[in-house]
Image (cartoon, rainbow, N blue to C red; front, side):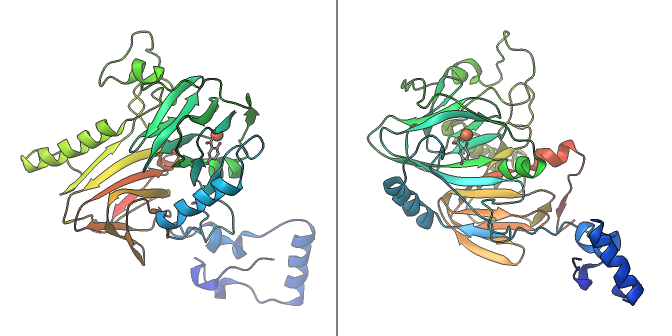
Length: 367
Ligand code: GTQ
Ligand code: FE2
């Protein structure tokens, strides 16, 4: 019989009956018959508000990158392991390679001339590049260049492999809904060819040539699709959108989410919704001297500092975060970010899951 910490039990411990021999016998009977009563579990299962087992945690890029480089020397990439990806493992999640209960985040590394073999899976995925270039990710045969600041979504069940065509190694981060699909028992996987099907390295993918024109929809593709058909969201567009928001704010127009805080969401151009059914991705820019209002929300997030530096506070943890550092915000824990010199932050979260299920809640501490 598992016990529940008394302090968090909604109904008090004095509500529990005395452990008489008759009651002990009943509990042993429950155990034998694989039964568990609600009254000993309710505090854990039905708390007054989310109490994530995940904890706030920050991983330093200056620690991650050298280890990925070392893995590049010692560990081959190929069939079976599939990817030289090293996952962020939340200290609260029992040694599993999960950043949060729903989200996978990893650093991936590919040496010059290497191929990561083609496969597909039901898990939704994306790549985000904090530094470097030279890898093309090939999605359903369409080679997509990866460069600093680019966001590259790859929705579930599309074939994908990566190849490095340059003479320099490259690292990037992956985000996937692996833990969510793992706990939900909804995962399927298929191997493709051992090598990527093309070594082409065009500047623009076919997907960008078709979809990468702001506000313009090809008339051959009027049906909404559940995930974005655009395979690259380029840094030059993200950067310009954010600097224009701050410029408009300075000119007196309402363009920022709060003073000094510009933000964009990556969206599916066929619907205007999130890029993938389970994953939300955003980019936030804080002007120098900005501090955000604390916010808590249902669902978990992973952030990566793209540029600048700032002070990040999640519940009672505070870190000085710098370029490349990654941190997690568990469900319903308040986040506040402040910067002196300016801060660019990439963010992804599981929010679309909760919005679709009408379970999403947001609360500013000032509300
Ligand atoms: O690059 O296809 O970090 O399938 C985890 C699973 C990366 C990938 C990960 C994957 C990939
Ligand atoms: Fe994959």
